Image 1 (tube, rainbow, N blue to C red):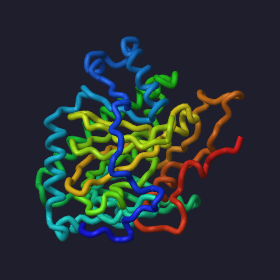
Image 2 (image 1 turned 30 degrees about the horizontal axis):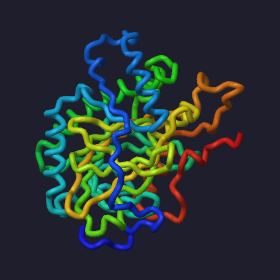
Image 3 (image 1 turned 90 degrees about the vertical axis):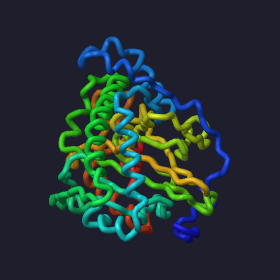
Image 4 (image 1 turned 60 degrees about the vertical axis):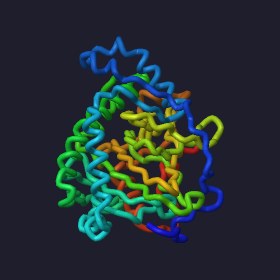
Amino acid sequence: MGEVDLAFIQDEAHRPKLSITESDGIPVIDLSILNTINEGHYDSIKELVTQIGDACREWGFFQVINHGVPTDLLNRAFSASKQFFSLAIEEKRKVCRDEVNPLGYYDTEHTKNVRDWKEVFDFTVENPTFIPASPELGDQQLQELRNQWPKFPPELRETCEEYVVELEKLSYKLLELISMSLGLPAKRFNDFFKNQTSFVRLNHYPPCPAPELALGVGRHKDAGALTVLLQDEVGGLDVKRKRDGEWYRVKPITDSFIVNVGDIIQVWSNERYESVEHRVSVKSGKERFSIPFFFNPAHDAMVKPLDELTDDQNLPKYREYNWGKFFKTRKLSNFKKLNLENIQIQHFKIAN
């Protein structure tokens, strides 16, 4: 990527400031106690559950340390990712994704209809993964997605598949903590994730000659349930704080994960927890790497506020929608600039 094409330039109102506050306020939560208790013995983690709930309410984001994922695996995942993105563009495009198979390499993704300054490689947790063949509500056909792996680096596939196993374990732990923080049974959400549509993305943000005009990823909210992000020491993830609407940079912590609540948790919780807007800023002299794990339910999951969290005083704030159709529509919109805004959960909001 060289000079900044017009397709990358953000509207003036959404261009990043080159100086931004690096926040120490985003909660850092120690998960070490989870490595010492037996499953089902939840009394000893009440304080941890409270911390998770507070972070979800106040920020929608938090960082976790002592999470149980081996440091060696994190290092190998970054190493394999860097080797892949260092390949010639012709080599990377041998596993290029398209509208038929949205898995593999891509370098022309759009967010809010503006092109992102990045290149990515996507693969699913379950192989194959099934999603709707089209976003049309009456179309019941399914599309089978299969991961495609490059020949080089040879260790990429094995490392990524090992990473998926560990991140899935961690994501379920986080989901159970969030469920308990809402006053629900620990495994209340788990059944939604049988035949999940979760996927992992390797991100590379090259140095940008005009970081004041472009973004690695434009402002957005995550459509799924949870995102668990591994970022390098360069940093660049900006979070819009709910309290004041200001952007804050998430300070990198070695071997930590950044966790954020997605739109599905917002709907399930009937807005007790909210999905928060975030973006990725880029730098002129440094490249950045990150690896988000997008924890998403099955394609046939129907998403609506949970009955346990609604009553006459807390009426449901959203109509029910099908996750697979929603996901398919969002996937298509990532490939090209559209005349309309991408589908959002606000389209299912009930005017009470």
